[in-house]
Image (cartoon, rainbow, N blue to C red; front, side, top):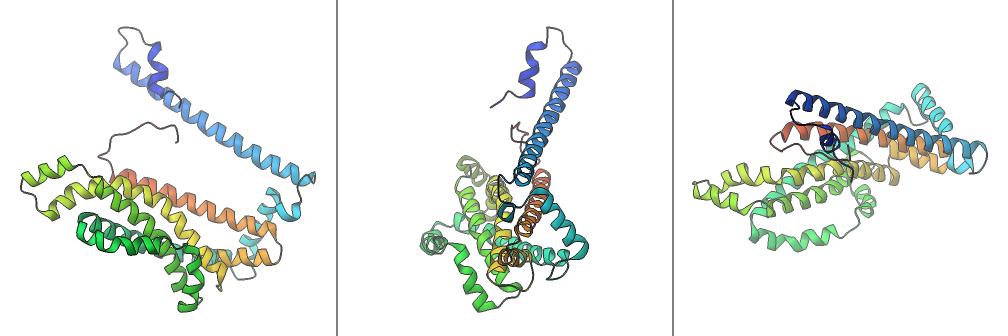
Length: 292
């Protein structure tokens, strides 16, 4: 764990240093650290891609199986300009995103509601906990063939799998967030005459928001996984279908290109989720972290 910017600049101040000088030095240290982080991120990325390209060109690795960064870029450019054998790249990407987004929102809302509901009701929690544990013990990806057999190759089966992938992650965090709520705050609210609904809305839910947002950050990735696995098992369109076809034709560049597309979309969703969390959780104190 490295020192924070304020810890780095603290020793340089003498007695009589003004608040404005301290603030200016702190901001400068923060900017310097951000630039250093960005620099090393780019260095690592360029180093990995350069080593991969060099190894493929020198045949230290087999390009047939591992492709190369230049080959992947060419495949992406071909898909963007000419489309794929299964239609436009953007159409296939939208199909996957539609399945993932519907499953993500439905699974998140259901997970939050059920998690808070069971977290607040011990009797119902005791009844349904065994069923939830039983269903949660099933590897979700093995449900893909069942959903496709029941719902067909269309949208519904992929949404169902994405929903299942998201629901249990969000539910577990929401449930635990409710159980970890500050009992003293709950007791104080009750002393002031708050009803059960008011306690839930003003104390329990805000207390559980950190847990819920932590699950949302990872659950969109699970929604993508659910949609792609469903497409991989059986679909007419989608990124999973592109990966399946690339696998069947031994097109390594195509498989890596599809994976990179999914990675970029997931990172974009993570950035959007972070911005939303920042806006909705302004009440939380700012905390410095080395993972920025």
